[in-house]
Image (tube, rainbow, N blue to C red; front, side, top):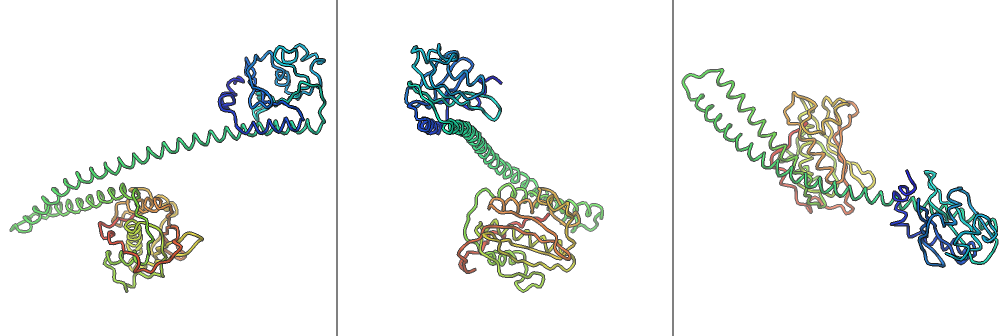
Length: 415
């Protein structure tokens, strides 16, 4: 890579760091000279940047005094350039471009090893400089390189943020299109399924009323009816998965009220021995969507809890976050399936009805709320389904929060 490519990569000439000005001023002060600058050398020219004590200009590389320091890679200190063979004929010394006498420069070396220029201080009067001041100039040169690196990383970060915003906008548009597509497909499929189901119902009624009916025909009619019901349920679940998480009505939400509403919708009496719970907290969330999560987790715990399921609902505080737990005493889940069951259309067991959409929808809802969700084995047997959401500082009474009645819509299917 040529030096011009290196300079272009770091935007040295078109967008030099503003902080260089302060460093150059400090260099002039420490060296006790009236003039200082950052000299950047391209393949053809010298660019004076952040100059102090004179007007910056561009000159030919071959006329540059700093070319010697750049090419040698060594710092240079000259008390009187008129008597130094390297500079006595230089136009910046002879009066053609300047009348430099005292001259000191330190190379600006990038971490890559490329030397792009110098930190240069000079005076039109001969003078000496103490070693400690010269050493300080070397330190300032290192800081100039550091600032350049920070500026480059800042540009890269800004570009990364810009790309992230573009991807976020594209993702939002994609989700909007997905929701619209899912809605249209669900509507169209629901219409077709309604026609099929209605026709099968009529045929089923005619077979029941007939004097003689074929057991084979009746079997296939029953099979088709069950299949159409499962397909209708899957279409509903896919539509729910596409729609959730996009628009949230966040309010303080008392989870006791949510669970009471869910149990009512599931037809479970408040004193049902299959379900026990401790007092639950207030979280920030959308009542309808958090209600759907609770309904799915409780339904799963009952379905996968064995012949005599026992569901325990509890919560624990961890700093500014509440972890809500729904535990069962069922057969549990294989460790390899813990992450998989949160993917759409993945089911851990085929002997229990479900579409494999429910837990995927739960994860989508909880992530939209800025939370996390997961499963873990329970000590003894069974599993614990959990999710974490931010706590609400002011704890409200259950009656002060409107219960999420919308959860009485189509229940989500389990994993």
